[in-house]
Length: 265
Image 1 (cartoon, rainbow, N blue to C red):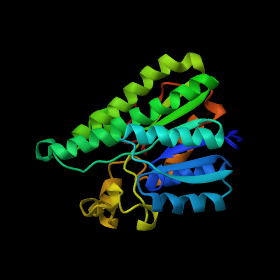
Image 2: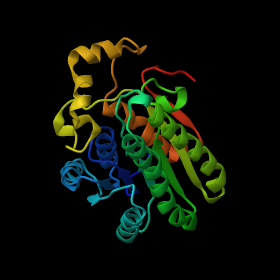
Image 3: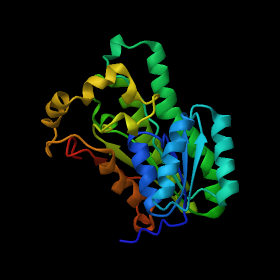
Image 4: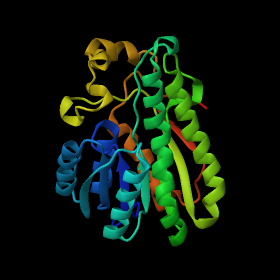
C-alpha cells in the first residue's frame, strides 16, 4: 500500500530512542524528510545517519528540549525553512518512573507533566500556524493505555496521557476545517531490545527501569497481554504511518491502542 509519504516533511520528537527511533526509521523507509527532534543530539545524529541509509529524502538531527517553548519554536521555524513546512508532527516524547503516587516526589510529578503534556502542547502549537496557512497537516501523538484506564503506579503519567487524548480530540474539532487531523496511538509496554536503541537520557536507561528489561520480567509481563508478548518499537510504527498518511484522510480525533490487547475499548 502506497502511503504517499515520500517527500513529506516529518518531525518526530524524542526520535532518537526506542519508539521514536523506530518511527523515525519507518518514515525514512517511506522516503520522507525526517527531523529527529531530541534532547540528546548525539543520539539523534546516530539515528539520522541510519535514516539516510534507509532512503530518507533527508534526515536532520535537531537538539530540542520540548519543555522549552522558545526552543520548540526555533526548531519548527528551521524545519519550515528547510522543507517549506511541516506536513506531519509526531509527538513521541514521554517519561515516567514506576512508583506509587504517594511515594513520588513533586520533582517527578513536575517532570512528568512537563515532558508528557507540556511537550505535546508546545510542539502542537508551534506547527499549527503553518499547517493552517497550508490547509493541511497531520499530528500523531503518543498516548498510553495508562491514559485510557488509569494504570496502577502511573498516576500523574496516566493523567498526562489522558490529557494528550482529550486535547487531541478538542483540537481535531477546532482545526479540522483547515484540513488538519489529530490522532493518538496508545502503546502498551514497549521496550528497546538493546542499549544501542536508546539514549543515555532515555527513561529506559535509568537503573530503576532496567529491571523491566530482563527476560524473566518480560515473561511475567507478557502473561497479562492476550497476545502473550511485550511490544517492540516496530509494532507501533504501522499505526503512526497510517494516521500520518493520506490513507487516513477521513480519520481524526481517534485513539488507537497498539498494546497486544491490554485494553479493549
